[in-house]
Amino acid sequence: MARHVRTGDTVVINSGDHKGKTGEVIRVDTARDRVYIKGINLRTKHMRPTRLNPRGGVITKEAPIHISNVNPIAEGKPTRVRFESDGKGGKKRVAVRTGKALPVMVRRSGGDRGKADTV
Image (cartoon, rainbow, N blue to C red; front, side, top):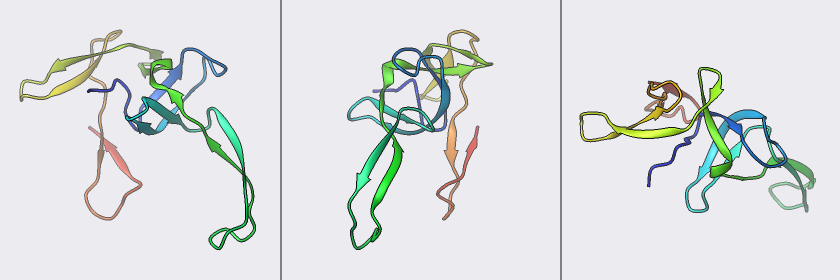
């Protein structure tokens, strides 16, 4: 099933404790319909010492938000998304507010896993 939000999108939260805040999607959990947004919905976790982390301590990390509670931003405003045929047998995401296609994040080939380009 196609998702209206993808990794790398800038989104606005439309309900809950963080309503009105914006951030970048860092991960999409399709099995649970959740998204992780950079700097939003932070939780603290107490880690016990292990061989990998001998000091242990308290870490802060992003907790998931349901995908229905976020909308992508197009031209500075939140928008809904519809899917249209791209003429090549595929689908593209289109912002309802502007009618323009939303950018797609494409991974670069090679060993550079952290970088992405927009198309």
